[in-house]
Length: 347
Image: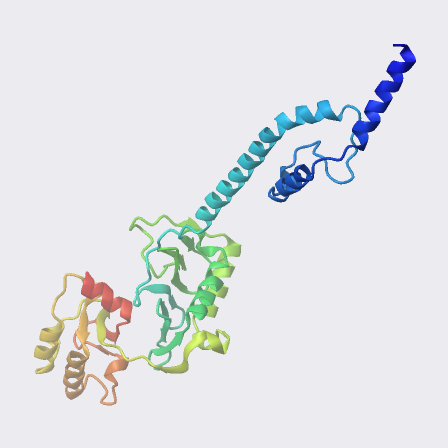
């Protein structure tokens, strides 16, 4: 057989093989298998995966073989990255939803702001955690009362704290201030004191309080703040910050008794005032807590008026005062504010 015969035989054989039809069941089987497969998401297809538009070069077979072994590793790394992100989000979320550290709740009778000042007369303003504002007395006018909302209470406290005076206990002494007195403002859970005057209205000699000497600029801030706080009727807060916009007389539950110049000698009083006052003004282990009830104050006032010591047009709930005959003692009986009553009854 010649070379030409071999060439012709091979050509005929290739032609016959090319014209042969593929079995129909084989094609349908291939299509059915393809339908049962779900394509991978594009983000899981490794670099080198063939999609529409990919070009396949001569070396694509070898490259595909290498990439086939890389794809599971890439998928695993992506999965680990997703898990790390989810874990981080859960951790951050847990920290964000953690409750705030518990704080000591305010009590209704707890003072948030308290002013006592002495110029030509004594002024007092007491602001409580429940929004009550009690102030006075002024030229014979009784203590007055009003109520703030929580927003009004915080506005007032922020107004005082914004001065920067209440970073620590502060003492202003000298000609830079007017009169004397103190302001206490609740900062966190501790009242901070700012006192002023040649003789401040609080004892600054001890008690564990370490005062910082105020500068002239701070003393000017003290004077301005005292003038503002002293008159609640001029605070100028919006109407919606008042829970009780009407100003009403404060009705005390007790009165407290004090004296100036010397200790009163009750035996100098005529009878029956002597016996009534001796019984009502019983000695106390705490001179600053000499409280009497309204009924006791009424009895004392009647006895003093009967002896000609007190004018008959007194109003017990406003308080009253008298000079004790035969001594230099000036006895004054004033309304006790809620924090005074709480301190004396709980102490």
